[in-house]
Length: 353
Image 1 (cartoon, one colour):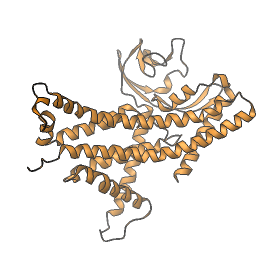
Image 2 (image 1 turned 180 degrees about the vertical axis):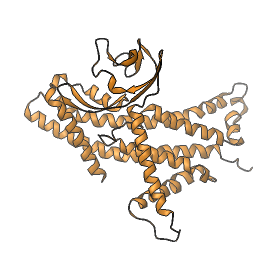
Image 3 (image 1 turned 90 degrees about the horizontal axis):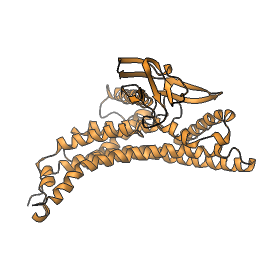
Image 4 (image 1 turned 135 degrees about the vertical axis):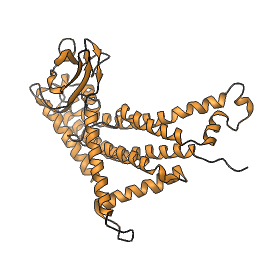
């Protein structure tokens, strides 16, 4: 099933790029722009180019606070093409900058405004949350009128139960230790949310194609939640090991070398969670699209070169997407596992002397 999903995604992506080919010369093709268009956030949902300067775009709600107050309108009111100043002009004196330090942001007189818009990443995240809720609630409904002695479910419900039991028994319980039940809802939510976003990101057309976990704002929030839970779950022994660890006195007074290192470690752990998930998912999307772009980078070459490089691009893209399917699960598992371990370390009881 995963292989078929990868092949379909690759073919759809290739067809999207092929649709651009008639109106595109090889020397005008920019692989960098194609890759960035795929992984970056935006105020409209670009599906594909139709040729002759036309594009299939899904407009999204814009919610901003400028010098003239709050404004709510549709992103389709912005011009499709930028003017000579690199601005896509819109209503109320607002514009979307396409270049410079504010590229991709809504600006007013060259300065960014307070932007609470439903961007592509936010829209995809909402869709993913709805899909996740439907999957979990439908599975929970199956158990409503059944007893523990009834046969185990099969099909989709059995798959969800298998994932839940695996995460609880192999990740949460060993990582957190005693009293893991209190943290299981949060850790299960992390796993299924990340896994759903990763899998939906493999689909090249709406409602997928969103690079949610490849957006550092999303991974920052997830890491922040883990950070807060760890700190509020820390016992006296946890804080003692940070500010007065069991090391020789000269390492903690008068110069608190080890306490400073331990205190910095409080923040480096969630930072590692944030960067690990963000970098792996963004790199996976970027590499897959970049390899597909090889087809168009050799469009001006001889037929033999085109065919050979195109075949190589397809093979490598299928391989990368198969690998990315595995990465979708691994990254969700790693984030959940590390969060469970950090929570468990904050709750370790001192050894009896």
